[in-house]
Length: 238
Image 1: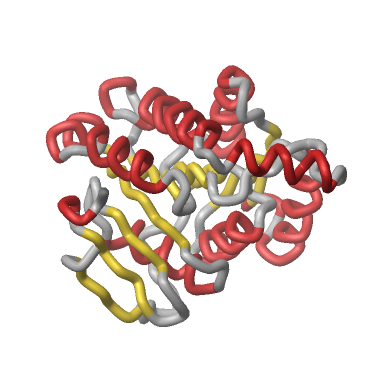
Image 2: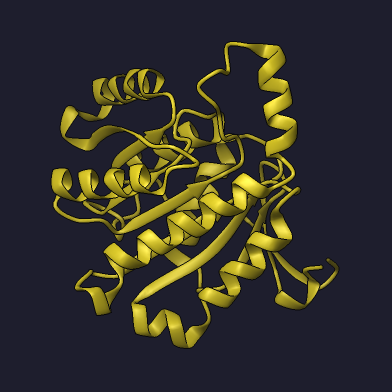
């Protein structure tokens, strides 16, 4: 990926464009999910935390509520394999907050209900990281975002961010670029972007805020380290 643009992440302490927006994040109790939630809340966004492990999700929501207030967070359960359950999470988010503006399909660290069984969990992760489940969740989450945020469906528009790991990156990026082409994005009033966090760090949260504020539909961003966010052009993706 030689043809790319890199920049150092330097955000103001407070950015106002996101204030009072509502975000829904899947796999919200993962390491990266929690970083996303924290940074969104710090910028005045209300967040629906979605996770397959509702107990862990509620615990995380309570921790954030202690800092940012109960009115800013909501814990929801969803299932990777059950689109109807994910749809109910979208509906619950909108019913609770009154709107939906941002969807983060976080597939970097999808967890399963049997995560406490380390042996079985390792097998499940091996199967999962082939990318099948990641791609399915990205598609399901994106279609639901269009259904509930798309202007033709009565939505207010918004932004969809796919976050993935290297195993499924190329497929997810290409899908996002196709569905997020300029004409479709304008019609739906939704931006579609991909964010690839190489490492888990606070910088990943800063990167999410940056692309929500400054990103353009179809873009693919990589968070490489604590200082650099890299935009990769379409031609460089294999």
